[in-house]
Image: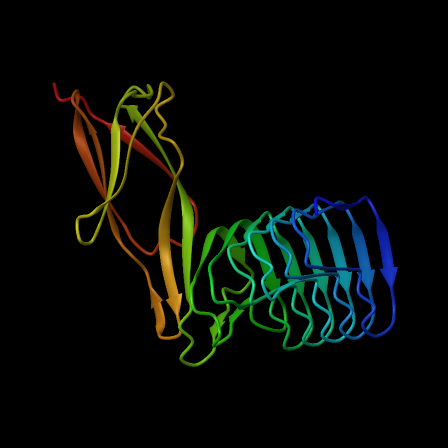
Amino acid sequence: EDSSVEDNLITTSGHFSGGIHARNNMNLRMEQNAITTSGFMAHGIYLFENKHANLIANKIITSGRQAYGISLEDGSDYNKLDTNKVITSGERSSGLVFSGSNSNEISKLDVETSGELAPAVLISSLGKNVFYDSLIKASSSNDVLFTSYTLESTDFTNVKLSKNDIFFAPNAPATLNVHWYLDALAKDIQNREIKDARVEAYDKNNDQIFSSFTDFNGRIGRQQILGAVYNAQGIVHPSYELKVIHPDYLPIEQKLENIKDNLNLEFILKNKN
């Protein structure tokens, strides 16, 4: 428990000659390791029944067949991955794999695969995993693939896909919720920032999604808004009604539809008098 693997240069070749394999650990820390492997099933980082691990700023390159960049398997739960770079080129060599691994948080991931049948992210988990501020690219396969064993939802926030190629196994119960950041600025017609304007968002059922007041700079706190829901049956793009209200200004209403990227909105409010 509470062990660390940091600042290593690891190069391996040959079948099953992975970079770092860890089993049955708690609070493991892997940081700033440079890992290169070139064998069959020579995974860069492989975690099995590891919980509360932190993987930070590692760079992983694999070139063998079925050699994953990072693989979290069988009870590797509650882990955090931050600012990791993964490149794989072999057939069936996914960049990031969850297999029976749940409740993980991934941020600032940069993953790229070029091999056939090598989705950049492969998810086969019973529970939920969340991604933030990441880049996902697969040049010869799906960007993201969900197997039929994935039961819960996965959440993306500000995650950019190279082709927006998301695949669900037939009848897979999995769901992917894609969120984006929403920033808003309120000004008057003299281009002066307005404090204490209330910005509200409502869904199609008129349920409030958020309500936030502008600060001295005329800005609200950053919000996260659901842009799309993917599953095996298709895609749903929610729509919203946005309202900007201030007692000294005329209210503004704006409809938001088909949100596919972060939003930076600016509202010009007119005085009531």
